[in-house]
Length: 179
Ligand code: FNR
Image 1 (spheres, protein in one colour):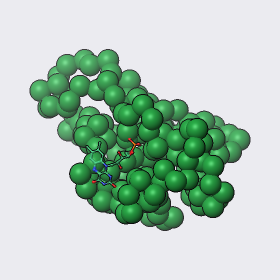
Image 2: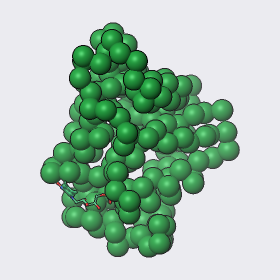
Image 3: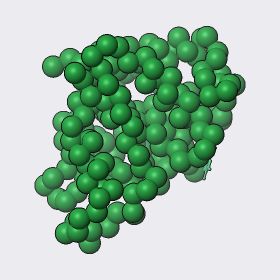
Image 4: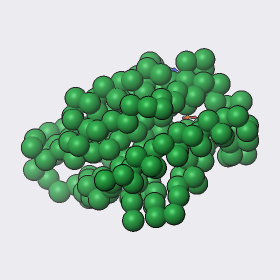
């Protein structure tokens, strides 16, 4: 069984990224389980917390530890990644010497109603992951622009977009399953 930890970078109720993430999760082939890592309740990280037992930190660290691969689906906030995503990246990188990112297979996809598809967020997330020695999936790259036009009622209802996302999903799940 291949375990995927899914991180949805948006905390918003009607998130377009959540819709995209749910579409990708639904493409998981047999033998692959996708479990969301909740990031909305995580206290802001400071190294002072390294010596404390924080149940929400322990929960996400255990999920990431157990995952064969991580999929991050995120919006862009002010030309970078949302604070909640950065907080998770930091939490899982510490205490020093106990980072969970080293060698972790990780893929990133962004979606935005704007023309650039949240590319700055996607590249910043990749940059952080690479700095922490994660094994970041290079291609295919997906920065989904005008994403809202492809969605309705919590579904990806545009066929071309669905086919495009499905190609990404096939590549990601195949890579995640490989030894
Ligand atoms: C945004 N948005 C945005 N979009 C973008 O393409 N580039 C950006 O830099 C920003 N900046 C930004 C900052 C903040 C604080 C918010 C709340 C929003 C718009 C954003 O793409 C839009 O709200 C999406 O709907 C966010 O994705 P979710 O939350 O719907 O998944």
